[in-house]
Length: 98
Image (tube, rainbow, N blue to C red):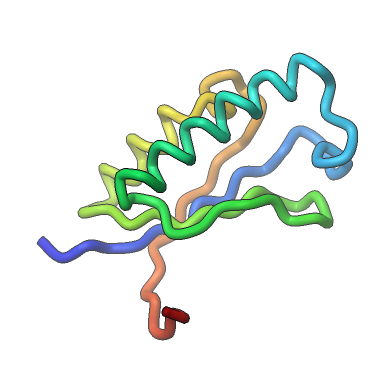
């Protein structure tokens, strides 16, 4: 099956989160970052990072289907800990810088 892409939006607990995370939240974010680095090394993540206006964290997954994308989100330590509220959206990448 051809790979498909999903936009992962991770809503933080508050708009100022990227600037004022507590020590406990930073610990969870360390695990979240390690999780994303693992996906990057596996070729299942194209990009990831926070929106500086506090709206979302953003990632693009390269997976085989929607079930795989959902499984990744459900394993995200920030979602498991209840820190992020996730959304998934299928994406057709029409243009990609190389």
